[in-house]
Amino acid sequence: MADKVVRVLVGKPGLDGHDRAAKVMARALRDAGFEVIYTGIRQTPAQVAQTAVQEDVDVIVLNNLTGAHLEVFPLVVEELKKRGRDDIYVLATGVIPFEDVEPLKEKGIDEVFGPGTGPIHVINWIKEHVLGEKQGE
Amino acid sequence: MRNKVSKKKRLVLTEEEVFRRLIQGDEVGLARALSMIYREEATSSLLSRIYAYNADKKHKSKVIGITGAGGVGKSTLISVLAEALLKKGLRIGIIAVDPSSPKTGGALLGDRIRLQHLFPNPNLFFRSFSSRGMVGGINPFIFDAVAVLEAASFDYIIIETLGIGQDEIDIVHMCDLTALVIAPGLGDDVQFLKSGVIELVDLIVMNKSDLPTASRTVGILNSYTRMVENHPDIIKLSAYKKQGIMELIEYIDNKWQELLDNGSLEKRRMERWKFQVGNWMRYIIGKRIHKFVEKGEVNPKASPYEIAISTLKEWGCEV
Ligand SMILES: Nc1nc2c(ncn2[C@@H]2O[C@H](COP(=O)(O)OP(=O)(O)OP(=O)(O)O)[C@@H](O)[C@H]2O)c(=O)[nH]1
Ligand SMILES: [Mg+2]
Image (tube, rainbow over all chains, first blue to last red; front, side):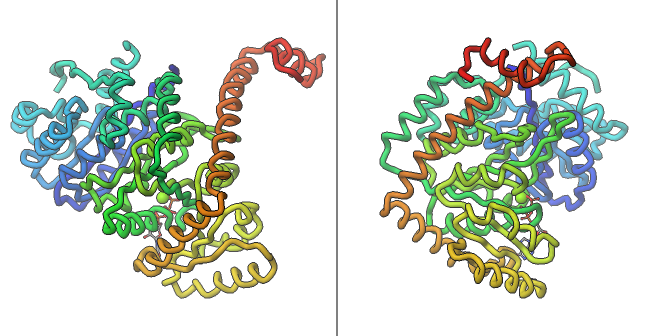
């Protein structure tokens, strides 16, 4: 059918109280034609995962600026696994040093968008991986 | 940063699995059923099974519509309502519909924010939908989404829609009971009195009664009720302060029971079913008309009416 709607969850797990970056991301993703579910700040990994399951999203874009990404982001993947939905793509954004990229990927994060990247890189990644996949079906 | 990601094996469920998991209340199956319907991937057989299943089963969900202008507090109200119902051990399914951008088709769905704190919770399900640019008509998917939630046997199904234009009337057809939420100080306290919706809803919820400007709105409401004989009931509350919520639940439960006992509920549900048949017909024909008009040749010498009639006849419609 004509409706290749990509659904994206923009999640902010952890105690990070800043939501500007996540909001900018959410808006950019919407303008790219995606359906964006935005949940607000201070989400637990379990909240992010249950939301992703209920909304049946294709991708989760995680954002955290407090530096807790190494602990928190893999917990989201764990929670998804528990719910049988670790097939959902998980992307990491925020202030993530280069040396954290491999450890995150080892723990199930599909791609990391650290400093120097912006929403456009995330959008292109989603278009390539999710939209490409859907159109190939 | 461009190293290749191994392609993930995405979850694919057959309709059989979706149906089986859905009626067990499994979230993955339920969520997928909604996606399939929304993406028009569900064949009519999934929907047929769902409707047949619902018609036969004893458990009936209470389907409650919450509509009103932007920012009156619909989502906040739903969150406190859900919180109170969860405390009673009930299962709640919520659908929120937000507009999508007519240009890109994208949408920012933010109604969840107000109740994310209630998660994780196995008894609470929330799904955000975009209206997907349905102009001048009803999105038939939302009706079928309600049927899906009914198949999952929620005790309450709550639907939030933004009350503008046609949609606000459509929600009445979808629900057992519909509440129009109003709030003081938004400048549209007179507007809602003028709109026809007020005659169609069962209940007016005056939210934000904690605000000092609320008394003005109460005044307007009173002058309205004096004018109109069969006006909907009015409940004043504050979602923010969680005041009046128990009264609202009691009202809903009593009213629902009353509708059930006097046969109105059955009637409303029949009407809903008929309305949905019309929805689908309008949607399907609308798409065909859209295609025709987009591709159609222009002949300024011909009357558009004549072209419309002759084309419909060509399609086999009696006109
Ligand atoms: N003072 C006061 N503010 C409230 C009350 N209920 C909601 N609000 C506030 O009103 C604003 C809008 O609330 P929402 O629940 O998002 O309203 P909504 O009707 O769902 O909005 P849309 O989905 O955008 O149409 C928020 O800032 C709430 O905190 C209330 O009872 N009293
Ligand atoms: Mg809302």
